[in-house]
Amino acid sequence: MKLTETKPDQTGVVRKIGGDAHFMSRITAIGVTEGTDFQTVRNDRKMPVLIYLRESLIAVNRADAERIEVETR
Image (tube, rainbow, N blue to C red; front, side, top):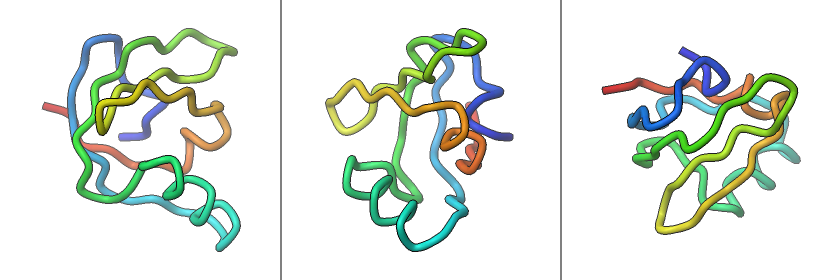
């Protein structure tokens, strides 16, 4: 499932991140890496997806969130 498909308060783990080298560098620099646990805080249409991971609240724009595959619990 993609990160954009998660619901608020849903937890899971990042399974796969797709994209070019620039995207990979940018997304991993903010702490989003494969195997990282996360919790979706907010996921409203046409708004960034807010996730909590590594003790930080991170806003991921929808286009980037589409490239992130997750497994929910």
